[in-house]
Image (tube, rainbow, N blue to C red; front, side):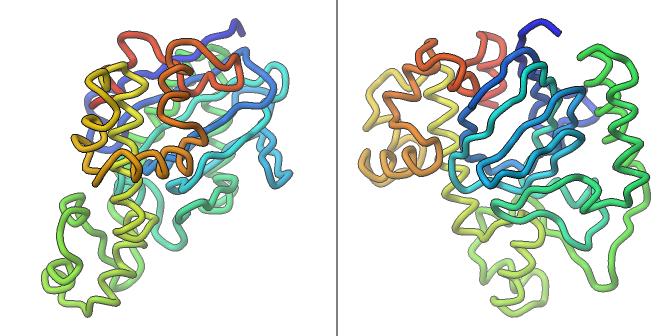
Amino acid sequence: MAEADRLLAPRSALRGLVSGIFTEAGRHGPMLFPATPSPSLTVFLCGASIHEDGRAFAHSLLAGPQGRARWASMLPGTAFVTALFRPGALPRVLVPGGLPEMDEAGELAAFLPQAEADALVQAVRRHGTMAGAVTALEDWLLARTARPPRRRGGDLWLPPAAIAMPIAAVAAGTGRSPRQAERLFRQTFGASQRELRALLRYGRMLGGLLAGTATHGLGAAALDCGYYDQAQMARDMRRFAGLSAREVAAAARGGGGPALSMFRYGEGERRLLLG
């Protein structure tokens, strides 16, 4: 496949579930992946990625929210398609019973029966084109959400509004103790409320830097995104993106070479980053 990377809007029926579909083909070598509040599902059309811990993924990769920047190395010829889930949406797709939490990642077969995971990989690869792979992944997601919910007894999943609510209010609304509400929050979103809020705040800042809209000064942009000051934003950017804010902005303009390709997007794609 020719080198390309694209951030696509999902089809309309999936927009409450998925914020974007990312495709990658042609690049290889080390790549820096920034932290994200979004769980993700990746299916490989060919090739593989090798992660910092030495694990290689060549079929699928299901990841919870990621709380720090990470390096992975793409083998030559690697191509993949990734669904980026909205926070709290993953329980609509997978049978609750062990969803990935913060910084967890593994083959889809660790979270679904092997036959179901294999069927998705085969469907994505069957068409031989990236457009066909995107269609197959979206079809699979739609089919999963159309199934009647299969939950363990007593399971409950929180709406996105719970992210902004005090945990005491979440507890009162669900008839649970604050500690039980915290556990329920983590089961739904894959992270604690504090962790997720920090990731979402950083995500707003990162999106502005990548889209080139944080042009009125980093301090003002940080305040707009919910930071106390520029110093707090700078600490988060180093932890979550692996780069300073100015380095992120430079990477978005084309600096850093292939290793920073996850920080570069076209004009149309930038609108999705801010959405």
